[in-house]
Image 1 (cartoon, rainbow, N blue to C red):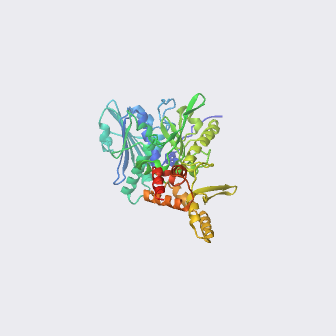
Image 2 (cartoon, rainbow, N blue to C red; image 1 turned 90 degrees about the vertical axis):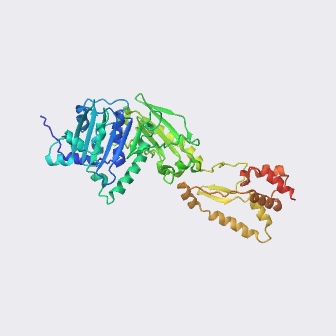
Length: 482
């Protein structure tokens, strides 16, 4: 038996472009590298007129000539050991992310005042048939887009994407297309790097001069958010930190929160696990195959922090956009899901009510049987009794038919659709004159015949009077009219 080298053809570079990067995921991979290099300022700069380039400039440590060449190797050096805060994984991100969007990748990097310029040009490689990078001369460096940025300061790196065939996707309106993608990108980066964009030493990240603002998927600043105790699940001596959040009902969101896509009509699809690696979001939403998304649990989000030492257990992919939980966690995660879903369900089911028998009298009641549930008008409600007692003889049957029709035609499907879209329900306010008129109807109908004080106490447990702050004063005033 003998060995012989089998060198892959240069066409492999073309194949690598189909790993499946989205534009947002590809940009996030470049930002990862900048953060790993200690950058405190990162600027994404794109040509929104002709779409000729997308650049990334950071003020990180930069690289010397040897380090730059190593960075452009397809998997880096064999003996490279990643630091504890490194956001990389396979040593492929810079190359695969960049070439997934364009056919030319240029890296200009500066360390100790010395600039190194290297370039992968896919067309050049295919034309020559050689695995060769281009080494840029001073004139080449000066001709590169945004190259003046690398001339400033003593260190930093400028990554340049050009020949953006995949990114532009033959767009007819390049300017509109690029502007739209950059707008989406700001939101994506604000979510993925949220924890780097907050605090005293926050990272400054911008896209075409517009600051990227952090997006907190858990609404920790909203006082209505419910937070479960932190739980540590250990595997191979490494802790996985789990913390569950139940987001507020739509009516308790601030104006700015209510405008967010993930808190509006599409909230349902954003429920589930948010998995972070070294504080960087790698998987947003979904129950990782452990549960189904449903309407009543859409307020539930669970933050999971995994250390890089457990990457192999979580099957983290090259794009750092998908994870698969190890078997050791699955059973515990199912238990966590069951616990936190209960809180979300309570937000939607009988808000402010108890589903079991209570001392309160509601206008509608829920009837449950083995075939499902239905709503009926509560015939014991004082307002219903007052109308019934005031009807002339012979009209009772018509009234009972009306109650039955109201129950049959209750627009449950429409209510569900509107609530699923987080559409706000407008409840008309009952002014004092309207409340007084209803009290007179109850008084004259004889549905409740008691003293004002006891009457106030009784009505305080009946809809809609239970929401009237000065109910006792109104009851006293109406009863004095007799």
